[in-house]
Length: 272
Ligand code: KIV
Image (tube, rainbow, N blue to C red; front, side, top):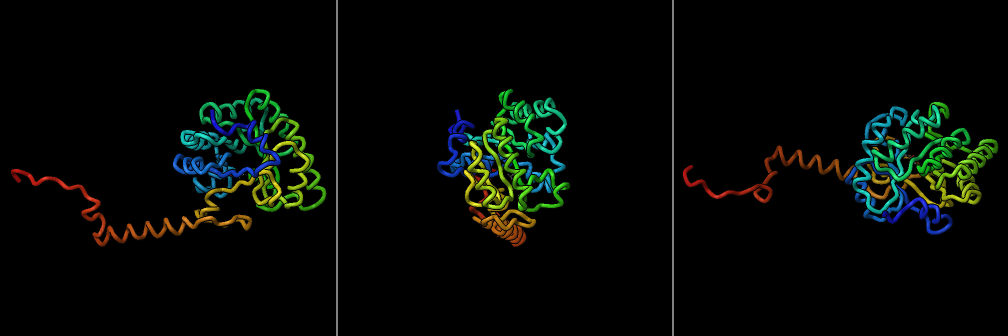
């Protein structure tokens, strides 16, 4: 049994803050798990970070299963949550159940994440009563980018803030074990965190959430596009990798790589 279960994440509400990172591949997931991160998200942000799309809309269930499988092969301790991609749960409860089951059975995910408010409450109930734990996602929901008119902070006016609070309560009542709040004013995230009995996990939602999630490409300097202002750079691996690639190319051209230390020797042939 893993150290981190949905019950344990739920019980962490109001206690030590819960760190969470995205992962999409075996080797990164192993490092994240070994670092003791309790919650790993196979986000559909893989559309941007791994597949080069300019949004998460083109991400398919097949993409998600492929990457989730790589992550779950590596993770020993953390709870792995897989995103349900665009249009794999919006059509009906049956569609959501069939597709969530594939992420769990084929991908090995421990739970799934769905974007949206009160309109997906039935979906959440159906998945949870079938044994599939659900994480909700409110605020900036990237699958709604075409409706939101871009990647903007959400819940800035009173009406939107009230709607988000109602949605958060409905999601918790439907049985979700946790809730992502993305790009939400810090005070609204605080209010929601105080109102719902499940842990909130913030990204660009200030310091009052029960947990914090970042896309690892953003925090490691691997993002080739615009890095959101709420991201703290913890390392500059993009430049480190770029310099290593350039040095390798130069040394191959110079014939300084491979040298004797990086080549295999052999005994002289008896009859050359
Ligand atoms: O897809 C993703 O990586 C996410 C996080 C930003 C929460 O949903």
